[in-house]
Structures are given as structure tokens and as C-alpha cells.
Amino acid sequence: MLSDRNLIQVFEINLDGRVESCRIHDLLRALCIEMANENNFFCIRHNIQSNSFSTLRRLTIDNTIQYSFSISKTPKLRVLLCFSNSGEEWSWIPDEIGNLSSLTYFKLSGTFKRIPLTIRNLKKLVTLDISRAEFGIFPRTIFRMKYLKHLLCCYVYEFESNICTYLNVRNEVYLPNMETLDYVPGTIFKASSLHKFSNLRKLNLIVINDQHIDVISGKTPISEKLQHLQLNLSQKFERLNLSHYDHLAKLILKGRPATPLRLDTIEFPPNLINFSILGLNLTKDSMKVLKELPRLKILSLEGCIQRRSIKLDFS
Image (cartoon, rainbow, N blue to C red):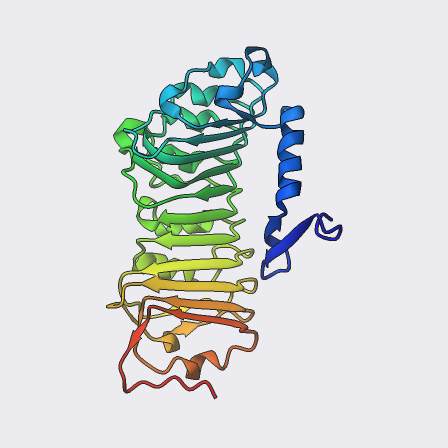
């Protein structure tokens, strides 16, 4: 609606036609910020008035080392963004974070010592974005938050041991509403647990093995709704069958140049539109396989290597 009124400019459209990102004019941005301040729409920590705690719903904290306000005074908080300044020591997230019962969106950016175990108490949390954060310790209990829909990670974490959590989450993943798993190490749960993500639309797995490939290639798809799949390969696979993923439109295969890739070992999804090969060793002419894909519109070959004797026939 905003685009039709020329208030914003669409910058990127998703494969299914939805707006992925947009641009906004400086004047309109300034107006939005001014109105947001007038309506107390979003507060930054050092701008908070003590009498506004009880009604606060959206909050940005720009330095968690000076994180001094009382969480118990913000019962209605729904959105929390925490940024630790570059060059700081490990920042701490207080255990009281688990008391924010209305929190639906939680984003961390910077360097943090750990995410407290009390995060499992956030029953209404829908999005956890830690894609720009670094951690010393990451709790496994995050994989038991049944209302969580979007988990955006950043490699690498040290996961808290099962002894510390009193729960063998490695065997008991329960995320029935999960729609986005982005940059998640496949080693933190059993490959068979992928079948528990029945609503998954986007999956980006790193550190995967043959078991993950076998589960993804099984007779039944891990999710009928899967639209975006990225696999970060560290070794050669014998077979990858994606022919039963009818809604899969974007596929990314990424790895090291030493990792060989033969496209004739892949059974592609019938409606693939966007295919990217990043940093892999192409052992045969990929065009012989790719030209048979009826709906392919976008092809990206980035950082790949191949023998000089192999020619790519685009005719």
C-alpha cells in the first residue's frame, strides 16, 4: 500500500512476489522519526523517562554494560534490541530477561558472554535475531521454545552442555512453529530432528554430514512449505534428492574450493527459480544439467573452480 502511494520505493522482490526490502526518502524517514518520538513509539535507553517504564513496548539499548534500568518495570515490552559497542569486553545479559513475558522480538548485536537460560521463559517470543552477535555460551534450551518462528544465528557458538541444562535437547528438539532457521550448525541436533520442522520455509544449515543429506533426500520432505534451502558443504555427497520439494524456489550450495560438486548427482526441485553455487569445485560441465531446469531464471556461480578442460556451454 505504501509503495502504491509512492511513499516507499521497492528495492527487492522475493521469488513469490512479496517485497523483500525497500528504500525510503530522507524527508519521509525524518518525519517517521519525529512522529515516533512524539508518540513514544520506540525508546532508546538514555532517553527513557522514569514515568514511561510501565507503558514501554519497544526499546533499544546501545550499551549493555550500562544496562541499569529495571526489567520488572517494563511488563509490556514487546521489542528489545541490544547493541554492545565495538571494542567492549564481553557484555552480560541479565537473567531477568526471562521476566519479559510479552516479548515477541529480541535482537542482539555485538559481543556477549552468554544468553541466560531464562530465555526459555519467553513464551511469546517469535523472533530471535543473533545474526550479528558473538557469544561465549549459547543455551540448547532454545530448541524447546515452541512458539519461536524465526531463529537467525551466526557461527560459531559454544553450546551449553546437557549437564548444565538438565535436558537432552540434542534428542528433544521441539519447534513446531519454526519457519526460519538461518545459519544453524547441523551438529547441534540429530539429523532426524529436521522432520520436526513441519512449517519450515527457509533453512540454512552449516556443518552438515551425510545423515543430514539423507534426511533431506528422504521419501517425504522435511517441510512441504520449504521455499529457500542453503547447504554449506564440507565433503562430497553421493546423492541429493530434492525432486519432492514442490515449493522450493531458491537453492544455494556453498563450500570450500576443494569440495567437489557433480550436478548430475542432484535431483532438482521442479519449480527451482534461483540457483547459486558458491566456492565449490565443478567437476563437469554444469550447463548440461542446468539447461534441463524449466523454470530457472537466476544462476549464480561465485568463487567456483574447474579444470581448464571443462567448458561451460551456454548455447
